[in-house]
Structures are given as C-alpha cells and as structure tokens.
Image (tube, rainbow, N blue to C red; front, side):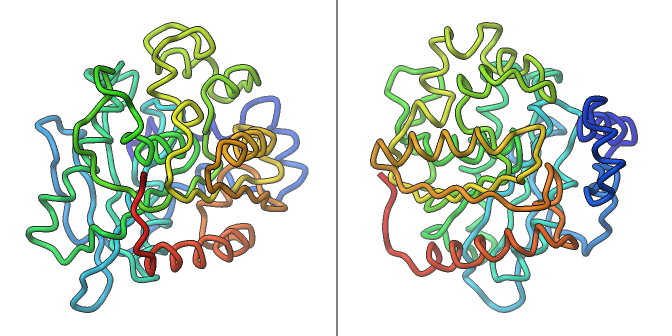
Amino acid sequence: MRSAAAAALLAFAVPASAAAQVAEAARYITSREAVAWEGRPFDALVPYGADSLQFAELRLPAGPGPFPVAVVVHGGCWLSIAGNDYMDPVAEALTAAGWATWNVEFRRLDEPGGAWPGIFRDVAAATDHLRQVARHHPLDLDHVVTVGHSSGGHLALWLASRHRIPTGAELHDADPIPIHGVVSLAGIADLAHYHGMNVPACGDTPTQLLGGTPPPESPRTAQASPAALLPTGVPQLLLTGADDYAVPPAHGEAYAALAVAKGQEAVHHVIPRSSHFEIVAPWTDPWKEAWGFILPFLERVRTSTRRPG
C-alpha cells in the first residue's frame, strides 16, 4: 500500500473517539498492523481494464485444480485510503484452504473514474473477467464466492445481488457471473440503515457512493444496496466484531433479520474481543473464531450444486 494511503487508513481505523479505548484495551490491532503483512506473492497480476487501478491478483492453491474461486474485495469507505493489499492475509488463508483467490483492486470514489457508477462497474467487470482468466488457469466457476471487508463487504454482497437488478437500471448487466456464496466481514449491507446510524468512521461516503443524494432518498439505492435487492438466493454469512466502531454489530443484526424475513438465507455472528480489523487478521484470536464459521460455510458452498436465483 502507498505510504500516504496507509497513514490515512490508520486514521480511519482508530478515530479520535475510539483512540483512548483502543489504547486502554491494548487488544485491538491497528490498521498499521493490518497492512504490515508480508506473505507469499500472488501467482499472477491480471488487468481487467485499461486503467492502472483495474487489476486483480490471482493466487492458486497447490495441485492441478480446478479450484473454487473466492473474489476478495477490500474496504476503506469506498475511498482510496485503502488498497487491496491489506486483504492479502485473507486471500492467503483462503488459498491455503484450497480456494483460488482473486484479490480485486478498483477505482475508488475519490479517484478519476470511480464516482457513480464507476466503482460498481469496476468490481463487476473484475468479477466477470474470471471467465477470461479461467481459459488460462484451472478455475471452477461453478463454485464462486465473494469475500469482502467493511465497504468491501457491501460490494461483495452487491456482486451476489446483481442478477436481481432490473433491466433498464444503470447497474444492470445481462449476464453477470453467478455467485454461490458471500462472506461479509464487518460489511455494510444496507446503505439506508447504515446512513441512519450516523457512524463517524465513513462519514457521508454512502451519499457520495450514490452520486450525492442520501441513501434513504436516492432512487439509486434500489440497485446499489444489497438490502434493496433481497432475496438473492445466494447464501450469506455475515461476521462483525463485538466492539466494531466502524460497522457496529447492530447493523449486521438488522440486515440479517430483514434478509431472513424476505426468505433469504443469511446468518450473522458477532465475534467477541474484536473491533474492525481483527477479523481480517489471521494471526489474531478473533480471526480464528471467525474462521470457525467461514471454513464450514465455504465447504458447504464448494460441495453444493445449488444455483443462485
């Protein structure tokens, strides 16, 4: 990650209101620790567009394959304060568990081309590009999951909802690649609900995401918010840290209740002793607890023949 971006992410991870709590508790990792991971390199860096930020990093497990695929989506309030490299530890853990990983980068709201509908178009194009990648690498596209953190959790859920966007909507695609499961790690799942919580961490970025109108009033919410696209027919696992100040557990709980009421398979678990970054940091105890939910979910998706829709 660029040093300026890392510094900005540090500010995002520990806002002034939470700094004293973090220092006193001494059990939460900082974003500086989250981005300091030095793991094994990816196997291939693949562009999916012409812009320098339109790329993804492919990691392949050992063996001949074909391998199920996890599309990994980073957070950072949809802004350039974070890049895909802080999700490398998650990608490596998934790859070690037998999943090919596709760690996506994209243009953010504060970068040229990232404003509405750019950020959505980028993550969609990156995911659909797996069809091209599978021509050269042993990928099993009948078993694809999305795994996202924070605002990347929103995008991961949205990617699994695209088939529900009606014809004529700006974000509609005629043939999105099918997604067979979603893991949302401290993810923003309902733009209107999150906006109403007035969480300081991401400020007014949900409004920026939709082009300037707050989610409760914006007609774009209907095609951009996972909650508005329920039910999707795609199983969803949502995990949130008990002490997460950026995406409080109440948000995930409210979304899961709404999803179940609409006939959607969605399960939300609260991870004790975790703030916002522990559940994407495999060296922490909260990650180990989260992994205890993630691994069985992935195995069920891997062995399932169920189609989304």
